[in-house]
Amino acid sequence: MIDKGVASAAEAVADVFDGATVMIGGFGEAGSPIELIHALIDQGATNLTVINNNTGSGEVGLAALIKAKRVSRMICSYPRTANSTVFPELYHSGEINLELVPQGTLAERIRAGGSGIPAFYTPTANGTPLAKDKECRSFNNRDYVLEYGLTADFALIKGLSADQHGNVVYNKTARNFAPIMAMAGKITIVQAQHVVDLGELNPETIITPGIFVQRVVEIVEPAIESVLVAAGETYP
Amino acid sequence: MTARSRDEMAKRLAQDIPDGSYVNLGIGIPELVTKFVPEGREFIYHTENGLLGMGPSPEESTGDPELINAGKRRVTALPGASYFHHADSFSMIRGGHLDLCVLGALQVSKIGDLANWSTGAIDAIPAVGGAMDLVAGVKTIYVLTQHCTKKGEPKLVDACTFPLTGCAVVDRIYTDLAVIDITTDGFQLVELSPGIEFDYVQERTGAPLLPIRRDSK
Image (cartoon, rainbow over all chains, first blue to last red; front, side, top):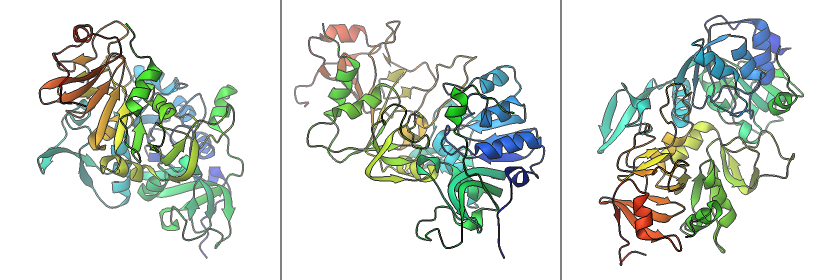
């Protein structure tokens, strides 16, 4: 019997190793798998390369992982937010590297990586500093920039509902990077608010088919990042 | 002298958006456009984090923290809205499916180069978001910005000195002082804000401004 369910967030992230590349879903707080990130902080893996659109806020979730100095390199499009102080400090002191990628290029690199496409040409960033030293090629009299697909050892994502086969549906704009990160992660771990019986999710409306998911853990009441930040919470 | 207010700038721009357009609005002044949809027209707003059919922000302290816009503020979804993942969202953008994007600017050059993501300051943390994808893919790019910086320097320039977001991508600029098209001949004045004189605008523009063409609308 296929059952991808695991008992706890700790168990779900137990084998993340030092130096791993980890995709973490979310755009700002929407879709951030905060319990999985906190479990990863407890677990202790370090020297991680993290792929996320942002760098977290306050001192919880992704920002807490960065604050704990577990992340040596960030690949993201927008490492600034109103409540983001952790990343700037480490960036300025040279303790964390940044690869800045336009948001749509980041998404397409992840989609490509998960789809067996090693590289692709995009019009985005042509003629800008973010295309510097990159291979360019002209198609139909327009210049395009070569970008490479991204894969990861682990992908941590948040869903609304999932089943034991790993099928997932999401909540509103929390979907953002999760479906493509699920495709690009060798081990994709989903925290879902509801783990439901097989057959309860309508096959017509499943967003991430279970083949892209390796582990599912139920987190019934996930923390809300902005609430934690407003309360001045820190993790651990 | 009555330079347009931010609201009036947004209202003026909204007049030029055709009924039924799919529109992406950048953060800041562009967001004001939603307040001034002309009577009888319907625009569908795209927010690149994964929503078509974005509605206004909900009442204070209500809404869903997982229903947000690209500025990470809570919004609503209108009847007929759809959610999608990031690769689909940027396929809409890069694939030329959106009709119009309205963006702010640090600088716009006379050939339509846009700089709006970085001042190039050495100690600043670079952050780009979706701006480069939007200018590369959306059919029409309008810039909505003050004519000059807070220090009074022109934002409309001969050549951008800040790092570019895209080359030759801007179609039209709406400022507090004027509406200006980018043409092969440079900055083409389309209209002056009420009570504003040509010379006043030219003095505040970093490249020659072509007078209003009689055949222009």
